[in-house]
Structure formats: structure tokens, C-alpha cells
Image 1 (cartoon, rainbow, N blue to C red):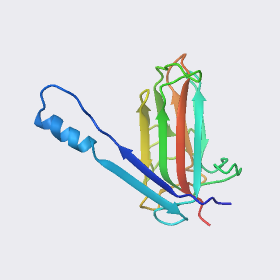
Image 2 (cartoon, rainbow, N blue to C red):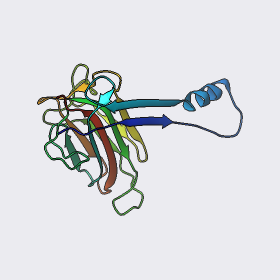
Image 3 (cartoon, rainbow, N blue to C red):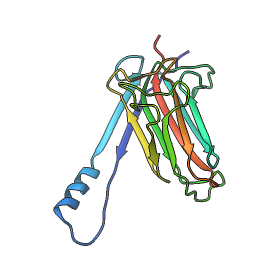
Length: 181
């Protein structure tokens, strides 16, 4: 079963500060104050989605978290759901431990060890490509207006790795996509 997903994603940044303002700082400030909005309507076509996975999970020191986009429980608690296309991926390193205190853990996000989501027209071009996310940082991948990143039996897993030896860290993950009929 697919779920009726309608999502509006808005990312806004702003900077402020004192001191001498240069042309570069003015240009950067104007750029960072822009707002980007992506809207996915309910459905299975271009600019649409019908599957959503949202979780907040803890990753132990030097631990990993594998997410299989073709075998998960969706937000309606339907088991065995799958995505044929990934439209939006959001991963946040909260910078917090499971007990709520600060964590110094840096996480990496990339294709899974088995059947990783990499290759031509995929979020990661090659096996082993990684994005590092500092505490409090986030990774956003979006393919909302297109057919999305292809998810199939050989391109379906994402791996989140905690690089800190002793600190656990809480991560937030949102994956929105399509289970084609």
C-alpha cells in the first residue's frame, strides 16, 4: 500500500554580524537569506511522492546505521514498503547524545556496503563517496521536480557512520519517494 504524501520543504538561512561589511560579506548575506521551497504533491509522478520514512535514531560510537529504502516500515507503520525513486533525503546530526547532552560526533553519510545507492545519476557517484556532517549540521539531497534517484534491488541502501570513538549521537532522517504502482 502506498500512502498519500504531500510535503512542502522550506530551507531558509540568514546571517548577521557586526564589524566592517565588505562586498563579499554583503553578497554572502544576500545569498544566505534566500529561501528555497520544494513541494511534492501526493502521487507517483514527477514532483510527487507516496512514501515517507522519518526516524530519529541513536548511533553508538564508531557504530553504523544502514537504511534500506526497499525494506522499511513507513510512517503509517506499514511493513515491507519500498521506494522505486528517492525524491528527498534529509539527514541531520543533532549534535546530541541519546541522553540529551552534547556530542562531538561527526557522522558520514554515503552508499551502503551492500547494494549502495551510488552510480550514474545517483546521490553518490562511486562506492565509498561520503558526506561528512558536523554536529548540528545537515545533508539535504533533493530531486523533487525530476523522476528522482532510482532505487532498485542493487541501488537501495544508505549508510550513516558515527566517526567518534566514544560518543553516541542522535541522527534525524527523512526520506521521501515513490513506490511506483
